[in-house]
Length: 163
Image (cartoon, rainbow, N blue to C red; front, side):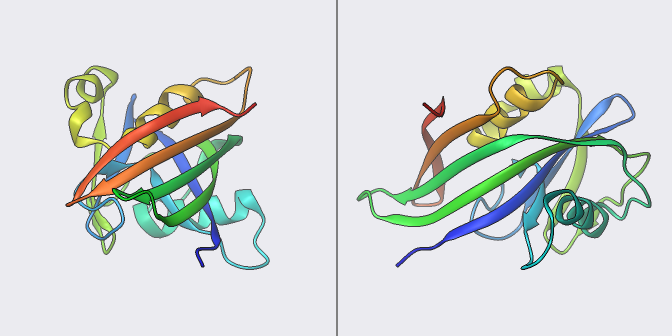
């Protein structure tokens, strides 16, 4: 039986661009995604999110850090079998610097134009989260998403506001 996994991710600004991690490991290998990871038992959301930012980026501080919303994301195989279910808490902040690589993968910053041009290289659900939660003052902060994994390719089946 698949259990729900609490995840924290962060939309990070650095020098007027946005930081993404090219994942080296499954799931979502070889795709640019938002920085983050699994919460530990007993951690509060912002504490876990900051820990992940520091661990993955090497940043010494994160500024203007805030919680932005939640996404319930299902990962299914081509045959429809559920392989993972993530409860993702999205945060937003700014960092001054980062290291270029981490055991999880390569880190790089992108302008909005670069993200739009190279969108096929990004995890589809993370792009929707990025678009929904990049700006403050969001009207709806609860979404649902489903990705299908087939032969190393991830396809977004849906990304929608939760009813």
